[in-house]
Amino acid sequence: MTLPELLKQDFSTEWQFQASRSGGAGGQNVNKVSTKMELRFNVLSSQLLDESQKLLIQEKLKNQINSEGELIIVSQEERTQLRNKAVVIKKFKESLVKALTIPKKRLKVTPTAAMIAERLKSKKKMAEKKANRGKIDF
Image (tube, rainbow, N blue to C red; front, side, top):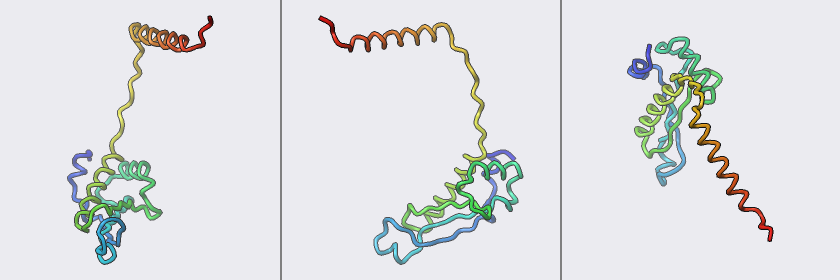
């Protein structure tokens, strides 16, 4: 399954949300209302991911995965639970994209003669500039 197809899948059946009290903006409301949202997604038992995708996610997001194999994403930036839930879902999708995209290999390019000449010219110019900074002998 390709990445765009995977992102269109409905992960909501595999997400577990947990709300708790958060710090930050909100005044006295912070002490009363649980606005911090935590999304838990069990990577190992997911039905929507294949084995290679699970391994990639475990490897690339290992700092966000606990010992039970759950990917944990937290948000407490917003002042309402609903907005924090939306932020957590957005962060989840972004982290999936980050983990499942494979970077392109860099092609080695041999420098052209003009590039080498330009580099040597700039090095010589810099050397002259630095040589002129020295003490003047009268």
